[in-house]
Amino acid sequence: MRTAAIRLSPPSISVRRSTPADIDALLALESRVFPDDGMSRRSLRGFLSSKAAVVLIAARDGWIAGCGVLLFRAESPIARLYSLAVDPESCGCGIARALLDAAEEIALMRRCHTVRLEVHAKNARAIACYGKAGYREFGRIPRYYGDNGTALRLEKRIVRAISAGRLSA
Image (cartoon, rainbow, N blue to C red; front, side):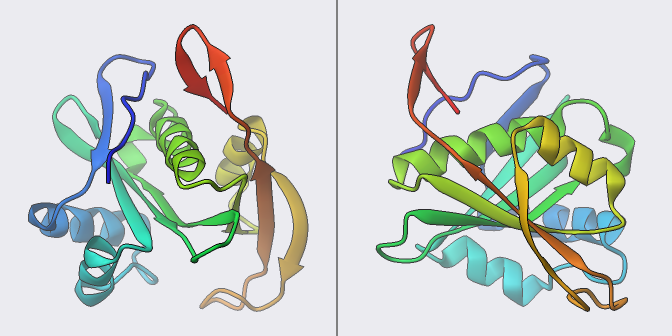
């Protein structure tokens, strides 16, 4: 699949599609971010080989600082951000926003007009990040997480707009 060049800020962050060669680094990131609930090697391999998934990596100064998994269903105008992980040492550096921007651009290229996700109701930092990016709550799922925590269901309608020659959401 062809992906658009993504303009990011700060310039030390780059986002690209993941490859099977990244799997060990992705697993290490998952274990740092989600020590009790990270994705397995098998799940990551499945996402990397699936036409219905895009695994994105955000690199900062040459090392993997974040990843995102975006899922698609045939004929659905809704993409699902299945996972967004940012290394704790890189929180607040723009990694999450860079991944969100890239995911939204890819969703647009796949003819989706909405991105949805779930986030733990206790994850205030992530909720604030998503809110700042334009995501709004549309539901809740009790006992969704392994700790029996509630998931907030968030969504954002994305549209294609021309801004200085690039896509923006």
